Image 1 (cartoon, chains in turn yellow, blue):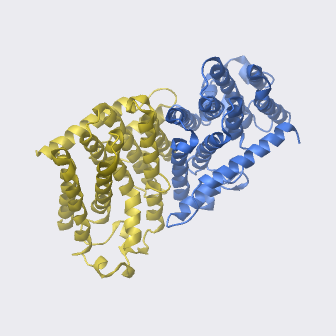
Image 2 (tube, helix red, strand yellow):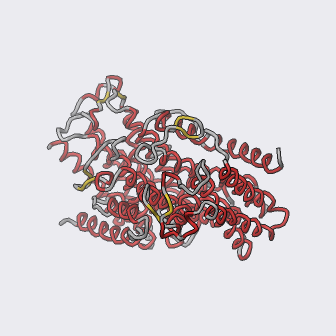
Image 3 (tube, rainbow over the protein chains, first blue to last red):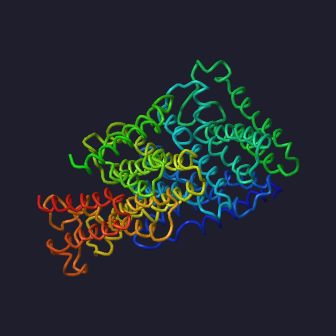
Length: 295
Length: 295
């Protein structure tokens, strides 16, 4: 296993242990709700977002206990969005991480409520003193996560995605959709280290720029390129003629996009060796994108 | 109009103006989401929870601008819970506040997403500096609201309510259900004034006790007593034989419960004339309960 893969695994294990400790035990008359929360959250997954939280926190030598709680909050936020996205009224998915989705394993009402509770728990964890000794840091984490996840962030991206399903949309709209739907939470994951480390000025700016680029490519790799590797988009969406000539050419559109993380890891150089894993993460995403494109 | 009714109306108007200002304008590609958020939140309602926020804040002479933002956050939280509760997979209600529910007016996916976004916006508002100059106050508001609303509060109450639908349950379970489902957010509304006013000790304790009693009776009046005024419970639920002899007797169960706010407003006396509206609120709820019981 490469150093990067080892680090990814080790960080996922630490985050899983933190999540197990933070999720309430499934007991009492509301045990069904708590079981569903644990089921969806602990079902596995690559934990890439939490890896970004821990790696960015390492750049600023943040106490690992703080970083793990922020990583857990990010994962709860991500999990809630998956649980709600999978609902019959949304993407109607029956499988997630190779297991039945929450509304199949439990029922729709439990899936809706468990998503609501995961979302709320993310904020509760960030607000607690164990997340950072300074209240001002905790409130900045909460404000930034709420902005990334809410009606001008992730949820807005979901709405646009549903509204434009099967419609012809231009590249600008697709880009905005992806930046909101996935990019915003990825960006928060990268920036949370700077918030925890109380960084200002150019360090913060560099991480922000890296986060922005990485968020965009992350969604393109994860969602846009389908198994045939052409520019047929997820949910059958295609870029329309207004998108410019390059959008319709499979040789151009994805390769322009995977240039982004290269710029992204160039931005990490200012942090020297401490940013090795953030650079590796960007390279990993390029690799995944190229591999899927060739599949 | 009585002084109480005038105060209730005037507070509702101020809260509505605050909500209109805080909800994003319905524009951009995500306008459907933003329209649904505005639709459900601005559909009216008695705004009793926000009245409690403003009244309890007045006890501690809190800046009205702070109190209005907390009131708005509480109303967004309450609205999200109604939007999700009304969904076909939950209570399947077609009307709310005399208007079509969000999933009827828009669609199910938009209703789910708009609920998620309202919940997130509530925390975003509390985290912003305009809610209180001190970060420690803002974080305490967030922590308390998250605890009241999440998997050990309101959402847990919802889960128990759904799980025990049409089942025979004992009074202890009904009481816990109501304390969680409605009582927890009512309690937060009352206590938020003390948090904003940075109150400690006996003042805080008195308000907490008042909040606890009021929350219980609020739900009983609002949800438990049906139009016939007997002890048939909402959703056809009945207290079972294990609940003790008094639970099955219509002359006993409600009247025992409406004693609570009387104890509640006795608790307000320590605040003297400043607590007039909190006492009036408790009396108002008793009156509503008695009126519905006699109807």
